[in-house]
Image 1: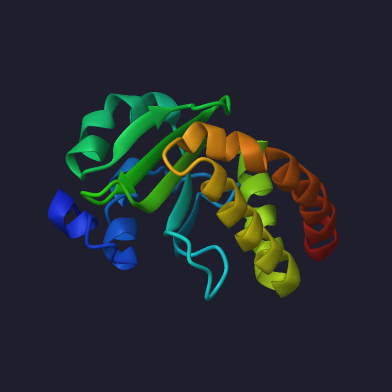
Image 2: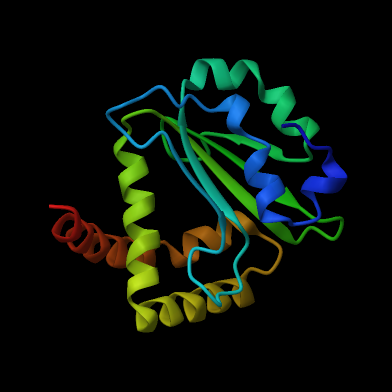
Length: 171
């Protein structure tokens, strides 16, 4: 199903999520092919939808124009080898959605899902993350790269705990 930029910009999570099945390879049996989480990582959190999928990145790169035609900005790897990162913003620059695509079997998939699930299971940590995001955004309201760098230490620390927790949950 393809949708135009107006529909994607509506922030309708189902529409955003449904836009990408033709871009994602669901044939992998070793890794959940799609963690199509086009909703906030944590319930009641003021976050934009996030979707992660496993795919053949070479084929996805060839279809970059399909992603941008939906109104998404294509960022390529943007600091994570083996990732394709895309964002959708409204006309005022407010982020509405983010997409992470990885090669099937990438350890980055587990890292992202572990962090998300840890926040969902630990409300106090999710609230602390929300405070950290607001703190970083207050320091760098117009510079998304500096904002990301500012919260990096907090995320890495929490991510380590999340991965340990996730391993215990899935073993």
